[in-house]
Image 1: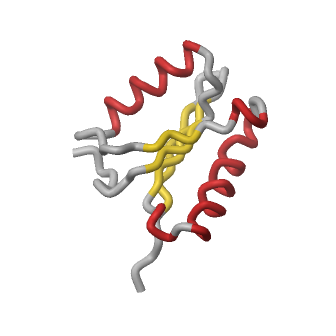
Image 2 (image 1 turned 90 degrees about the vertical axis):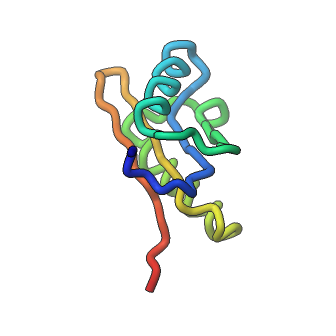
Length: 98
């Protein structure tokens, strides 16, 4: 099992459209998802705002939270960031059940 909530339907990533990052994203998805969710919406805003480098993580989180405010069923969601220096990070954003 991947440890990820099975209800993830949205992925925010730092992928910028280059072939290397597309391959890396595909490898990540096969490693972290036991079964790929269907449908899975992939949001990759680097094509609009460019490569933000280290600011990609906070910017993607802010974008996900902004979407959540309009559509509370958008969570849980997955954030995926990668850097040219080899560092990678994943984060799952969920709502707390109180």
